[in-house]
Amino acid sequence: MIEGRIKAPLTHSPGVGMTSRQMRKPLKGVTAVSLETPTDLSPAAVAAVSETLRQLLADVFALYVKTKSFHWHMSGPHFHDYHLLLDKQATEIFAMTDPIAKRSRKIGGTTLHSIGDIAQHQRLLDNNEQFTTARSMLEELSADSRCLTKLMRTAHGVCDEFNDVATASLLEIWIDEAERRTWFLHETLHGWN
Ligand SMILES: [Fe+2]
Image (tube, rainbow, N blue to C red):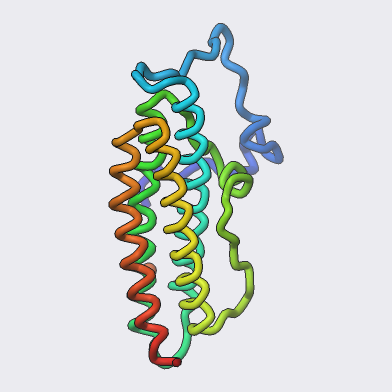
């Protein structure tokens, strides 16, 4: 064991029993700074696009967690294939999160701050069931994927309205990726038809 590299037991912590929020001391002399970023887009455009991206980011995080959860809780004769398929899809979905958040910041908007913020903004529903069959998992993800595609098309429309071509361009890539995920899920489900 390496001395000095072990965290002190929590019972010796003066903040034991307190939440991290309660333990966080207010910083004296620090005032809020503006998070605006210079942009030629109008304030209305920034507000509309960043709100659209905030909702999209919440949906993408929700779908990521659901896909991972199904990857973890998969069962049945095709376990290995489905387990790997969902891991691949989860990785692709997670890869969208950072660019979505940064796109909002690049134009001077803000984005999600917490799990609570995700819960407040997500439109795709969670699945909290203790057991879901493999078929139901694939059907649910296929429906979510089609729903996400639709939501991204709507988001593209908001970008078009304000001539935010960069966000629109990213959305075009993500729509294509979502359609590929839908295709793979749909074809995998064919075995049951
Ligand atoms: Fe895994």
